Length: 221
Image 1 (spheres, rainbow, N blue to C red):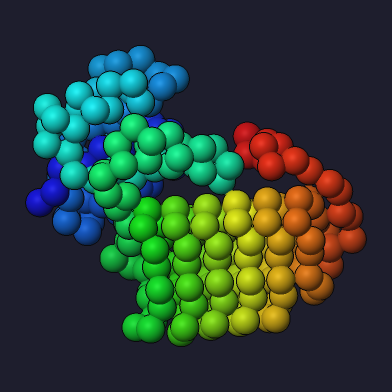
Image 2 (cartoon, rainbow, N blue to C red):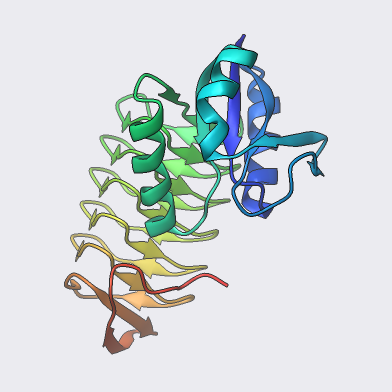
């Protein structure tokens, strides 16, 4: 099995570990994290370094892959760019929980994480380093651009386009044939009946409040 690292030692990382262990395809050597102390143990795995020590860790532990366990889309994008600059040959591992349902003709790109009971329907495409959280569904012929995410319980209708770094929050529903722009946030439990532009925050059932945001605006606590 390939030796891998997990970048980010958060609650999201614990869910990813569960999926990796159930896949039983990779050997987790530990975490790298720039904000928590070295040697701290989370879910039985140790924080063994940070981005600065990544090249040394790759050589010492014969690391072949990495998973970015960062829930915030913009921060995950930044982490991806930093890792690519430091270790351009390192593979970004795709993690799919065995209880996820994936149609045979979908495309899933590197680094994406798909949690338990998520469903990806026919001819959907999921970009790099996306997150489909627990029991979320992506409709047929829909597309998630790189670094976008579906929170738990989200339902996305068919032929829907979700832009780069955009996040659909807990329990939201997006009907079919909708375009959601880049770096846009759909609030929890919202109902989306119309397309949304780039760099917006929207919420309501149906959506009725629309605000501007910047690419790095915080949306996760």
